[in-house]
Image 1 (cartoon, rainbow, N blue to C red):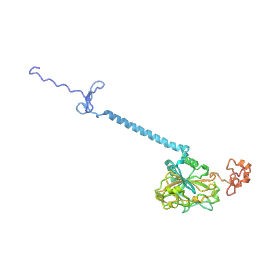
Image 2 (image 1 turned 60 degrees about the vertical axis):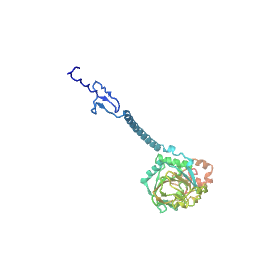
Image 3 (image 1 turned 120 degrees about the vertical axis):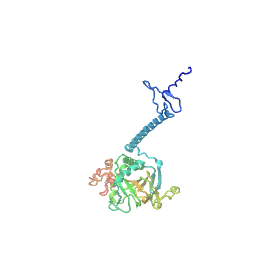
Image 4 (image 1 turned 90 degrees about the vertical axis):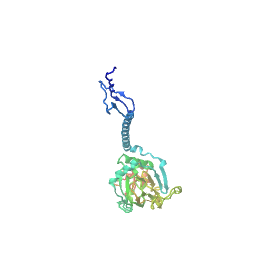
Length: 359
């Protein structure tokens, strides 16, 4: 250019670009032509240093949300399966969890006999139905209130639901005693200071013996932990020497130190026999529920008789056969050879009265 000529024009500004912070600009091409709109006044659209990290974080959040929903659904379905199939697998017994407490009386503890689900279920069924516990009168056999027993409780029918039926099956499997020989499970609650003084579970009156005979065994299931107290104690039991050497009484209440005691631990079960193998009452089976000192105690008791407790005495002295083999036994002369079992008495009916032509 010569003198007097105009100065050259500055070049036009560059088009807006897409530029990650710290990196070179790349022109934005939009469909139909045109260019991007600058957002920061400099012609550049600034994004985070690593847009792919932001994208990955968003996708991971969505993935975790989906996984949480899946896990919730699996948990829900599993819980429903536990309820609906309780009876099919709850009767599995693990002998390694059973330990001997005494041999006089025969007493054993099964650690973890009930699951948390089973414990909670029994408590939930009982809570709204609790009534003051009673004892059986030694003469009449009728129930009566007594200061000997101060808990509250209720009975749960054997066929209440699948979970209860599963517990019934598990008890029968462990004890090798038929389900029909047992009474309904009684759930008990002991509050502060409540107890059950020393007593026997077998009967001495004819009224209670007439239905199922003596109580042969008891399964006491602990549904809750207890802060202090609430132990089951056998004051006249004979403790095995090896047990004496391996246990201490430091954490037991004064009541429990008077004999062999079992601390109430949620899920554990205590099995003891009130009769000798000869069916004679065992005086060593005397036992008591110690007063609750801290917290409250929930338990479930299963009394099991020597014979079916489910049979209906009915009218006319129970004129029915209680065993499918009654007619065959009668043909072999057992009505005369074994009248106590086959025929019985008006107070204690036998099991084959029809086949023995007593009605």
